[in-house]
Image (cartoon, rainbow, N blue to C red; front, side, top):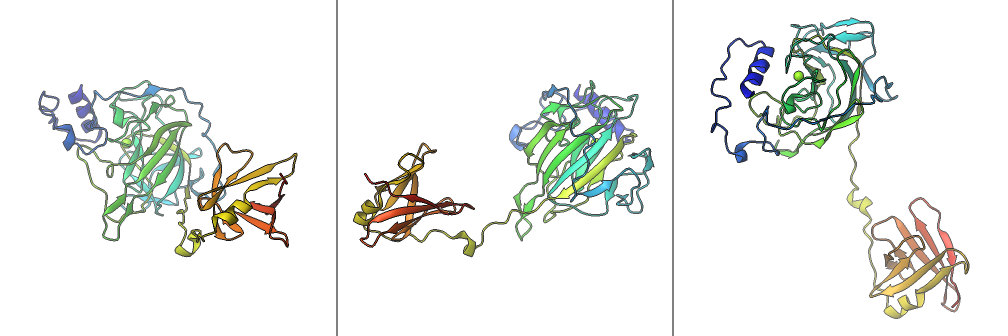
Length: 371
Ligand code: MG
């Protein structure tokens, strides 16, 4: 079984020699600890369980590009693509789609992308031909390095980590959600590029989330390196962007409706924006004087009680009280949330009102309820 799949894969890449005579023999497997995958499975292990088959609804086939998308194919031409070996992309375009032209090699976008949302539609050759990896094979390469497998695995067998929806050679799809040959299928991908220290050391691996025909097949998985065949490869130090590349694996797979949206980096608060509460000491007697019930006698009420050096705020729609800390004698804030509680007093120094503000709301007054 193992040897057969190896031969098929090798033949599919155009190799002539069959050199798998020792593969699959008992005792030739290295200890799991030496396998650089989190799962412990060796690449292409035929014993690895296949995912469950799911009949997809295909809700994402034919979705139009959002306004901010970079359209990579709109049915007309391959102007934004080039051959991966240089020069123009030479795959053929017809009837609003383009097709792998075997022997012309991979094509890639001229533009590079990092963090991105990607939509791509593809169709396996119909009628189907070949078996295993030699059946409708292509691939969507993110940053030119991480392959989401494109393969005809509709009622067709191959190793789990090489099925359509796989991060090739590393992560099988969670489900086999493929559609029959000839039918349009859709990948929707969220890709987070790897992060590196200034020295080039890997700080965060890439992350891939992918839906195939509307079914989640990769859930925020971290590739162990660029996808590869037969040997693990490491991350390319410092590489955080790259082209989107489509594989020529010798099969006339068709493509259409391809677009990508660049994703923003989440911006952490600067030191000045952090606004950690500068807590002041308020005497316990003053806190006790502020404690009490505020609101309408027959409406929404806030309960304030003292706890040690701060107050607890009980809101009617929350089971547990919130800690609020003093930043001035009559001004308290929620430590976790952008919200504050300010007290007003009368001329006699007696609290008469609290104003509660949370986020974008206007301060809301709650008069003190006399007890
Ligand atoms: Mg492939």
